[in-house]
Length: 137
Image (tube, rainbow, N blue to C red):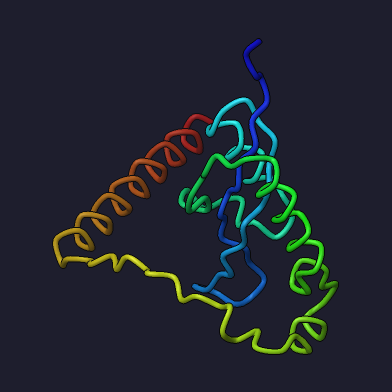
């Protein structure tokens, strides 16, 4: 008989620690496949839901590892914080925080000029339409 549900440990980026920072947390998940495990984890509390790269890793494990991770998460103070003050009370919390590697967007003079020209053109078109409506009225 083939198993339909598998045990996974999904490493995700968790937030509420400042812009450009995250805390990597391993979540135990029951799912049919890795894709479903990642999707479920993305909607857990604290996970940075809207980031494309919020899921760092998905790993299939056995039941013992799954239960061990559940116990670790039950004892993880960060996952039980209700406010910033609770986070600050956690010993070595600063060591848990990871700086996000931010991609720098380089604006060229050309792209800025193109944006301004496009904006001016759209404003001109809108003004012309407005003028025509006023003339007809």
